[in-house]
Amino acid sequence: MTTTRERRTQAQRREGTIGALLEATVTCLTERGYAATSTAAVCAEAGVSQGALFRHFPTRQALLVATAEHVATRNVEAFRTTTEGAAVVTVDDVADVLAHLRAAVLSPTNQTWRELLVAARADTDLRDALLPARELLQAQMLDVAGALWGDRLSADDLPAVLSIVVNMLDGLAFSALDPDPAAAPGRTVERALHLLAEMIVSHYPEEPS
Image (tube, rainbow, N blue to C red; front, side):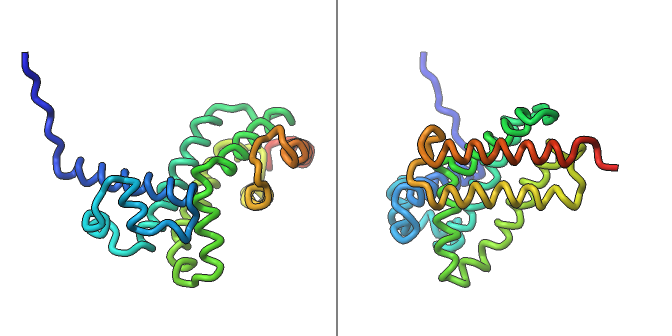
């Protein structure tokens, strides 16, 4: 009995090529860093020709920005799925949610963002190009945080609390060579997140009026 291989449509082939390029860029940024993530390196990693890359992304910068958006959406959705339906009543509940956020921020794929943000400090074009992706990430994170804490934190305080948490975790990611939670300064951060959970629960004991 013979079987025929189902042919992919042009749209499916295009989607597959773009997906391979984005994943290859994530790998290159994570393993090699920003400077070594050339279009040639990405194509070699993805098994795609440079001509195919430039048909979808006219410049290296366009590829990097699309990768940042890809990683942000994927990581936020993973965090949303992990915490969906989670209770946030007790200190331990809130600390558990913060621990999941910590895992997302310290994940290897999130190294993509760290590499690009550091590079953007000295590259105004990249900084400007990344702005929509940064705003999208902020909006997605606020949406998830609102679903988790919207009945506890006021609309004015929710972005501020999220900023405190994310900036602290980003700082850890930039400074820590070993992201293992059991390694220093992991234990200190774990205690810091628990203290923050205590402050959230004690400061917002009831639904905002």
